[in-house]
Image 1 (cartoon, rainbow, N blue to C red):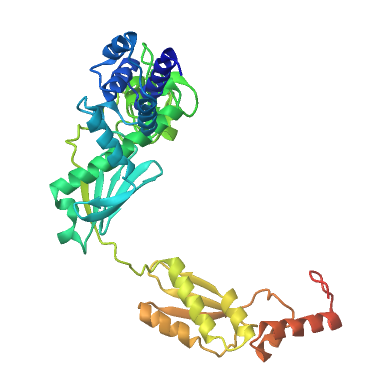
Image 2: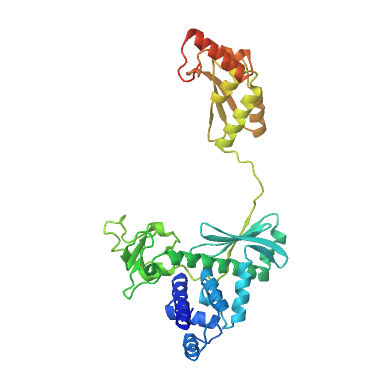
Length: 382
């Protein structure tokens, strides 16, 4: 690679970095120059004119840096060694230990989550949203997130990873989506529409093109995602022309929101789970294949008080047989149970065959023999 080609390569990487971090090109050039040990880009160009060229290792380090999409604001000093140490720190961020506590770090639907035993920290994709810290009620007294030093280190890891996520998003979007033009017009990243005014489906107000681009197309008021941002308020009679400007959220002090949750397993007595338990109990009550079919076909309804009504097919379930196991399960759950018989279309012509066996294969053979003798087989080859 020639000297000119090496500098051209660095300029190209700076352009990619500018797009990813949503900054002006000159800021990205200065950032890369600092990473290479120069005070700014001008100093780097001057050195190049008198013979300095970046080594292959330096170019590779810049490529790795740009791939991480970390903002220049994350590097407060011009020390190349400090930058290298930070990159090494981030390289190991998927799992590790902070002050003796193990953690795992992952990205889920563009939110960054760092979590350990009894605690988690979520940094949302929305730049204006506060980080959320959740701790388990059981581990509340020992949770490391209440240690300010631990919390700071964990937040730094999550925020660095989020800078990479947002950088990747910005790189994938059109440049105009994150850098409005001189008239304040920005381009919607999903529908390729340019406008200097935007509207949130959930908020009664106008958003400027600069506002929405700066906030990665999340509503600055409610945090709604880009799919809820439109160039006209089609839900208003005047398409939003009379709506007032939307202001930004109150400036955060940088501290996350804390939530203490009880994440112990709980038995949820919702309709789905009650029906599942009652049908299982009916199957326990079944002593032959006919009754098993009756349990499987039973209509089980649950009312607003979680009380249960069971309707059993009279040709499959004996009229006088009580579902004793189902009654016991209802008593365990503290709910009432009512049982009735119903008449409906049974699945096969001779339900009484099921009373003679508990084996599905024996029952099916009885049916096959009967159908061959008295009827026709429509769906299988006899």
